[in-house]
Length: 117
Image 1 (cartoon, rainbow, N blue to C red):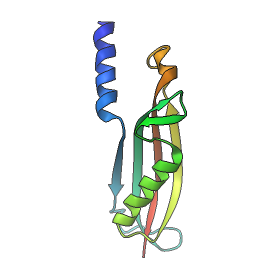
Image 2 (image 1 turned 90 degrees about the vertical axis):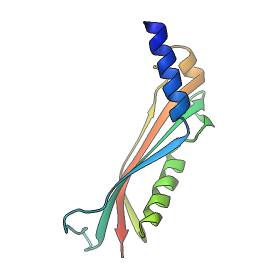
Image 3 (image 1 turned 30 degrees about the horizontal axis):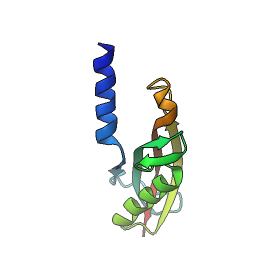
Image 4 (image 1 turned 45 degrees about the vertical axis):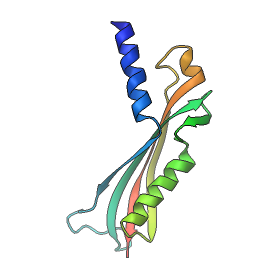
């Protein structure tokens, strides 16, 4: 059973590696931002496998790349400014013992508001 679980985990990591996923909530029911701007909330997640927890080898889930993906998504929705409210990076070296130190699954999340003119 453990062997099957490990194979499934590796399959999921292989398929989902190197992707960027964004979720958008663009209807805050008329609520405006602090400065009176129209808001669109964006949540961007990057998944990758890094070598020794630091060097991207399949995809790029560094904070810098995730912020760039977030900004690109904000531009698609017509934003001229963004306000990042949260970021998080999860380095999952513990998922696959020993091998996880070499090939480390990494997930980074950036959430914030795209401020529309």
